[in-house]
Image (cartoon, rainbow, N blue to C red):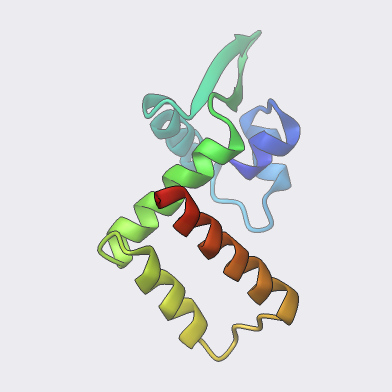
Length: 113
């Protein structure tokens, strides 16, 4: 999806060229077919090739992916996901990022009341 968001439209060969360690073109086509079936990608024929483009915004795709990760690994709990991330010794939050998270939490509290 990142390649499609960056290019706005791409053929399978272009997608493969943009990936650091690309799977086979058959695997890319299979994934694109799945994404098309789920409504994330649109396909258009141009001559002998198919061009693919995002059918949803990057924000909508990101929310859907996050929801899936939360459901799969954290029983739907954003708090558990954040706790797991913060418990990782490799997590390096600077003061600015911590203040940003605090503001987001405060805003979420206000929005709920």
